[in-house]
Amino acid sequence: MINKETDNCRILSILVILIVSSILHSCGLFDSNDKDDNEQSIVDDFPIDMIEDLQIVEFEVGSDHRGVVNSWIILLLDKKHEKVSLVINGKDVSLLKEGELDGKMEYTGSFDFLPKDELEYELSLDNNTFSGSLLVPNFLEIECPPEFDFESDFILNWTIDSDPDIFYSYIELYGSGISYFEDRLVSGDQRSDTFEKSIYESYSTNDLSVQIGAYPFNYIFTEDIIFITRSHVEFSECRY
Image 1 (tube, rainbow, N blue to C red):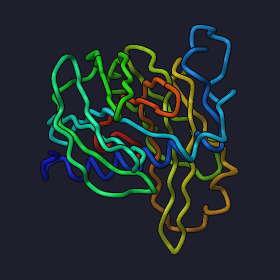
Image 2: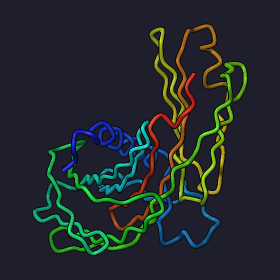
Image 3: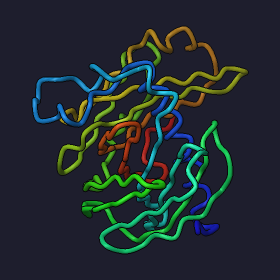
């Protein structure tokens, strides 16, 4: 069961899951069987028609502002399943059925893991079993310029010790009755993303708050299920 200390992280995680799903719908994502080619973009050849039926299993580790590390699991599965079980690294995970979310049934589970851990999972849905192994990406460190200039492109730089499959980056502007959010997926071998000034230069006369950040993901796509590992550091973003 997810305890109160990780409730806020769980809510954030669910939001990110839904955001990533929407990105996949608009951009596409290549099948994990093609990942060895090293030539195919993450935005190529995803079967768009399947996205509405996509089931999501996310393993996330987060560090809060005190440096306390927590890990948790969220599953968004088809409501039709009568039997659901999950084993990680040979240990049964107790799953709690939280209720319906975005047309799927949400389950949560607790399992202790850290960045750079390898997770061997076995998910059983009724009579079907899905197994594999995913590395939990390490925490990344964001490099923030001292000021935000509405008249210049913003280059977000980060460091991480090894390449994940993808990064998820975003920019948010809000205040003075204005709310704007944009996000995208960035290849795992990149260490920066540029947000063009055309996104926000028209807001330069407004008193706005700006948040810009990124998170690393690893994933495996199998039939209609995507398995994700993600690491997140609270407030690890540029704020102006």
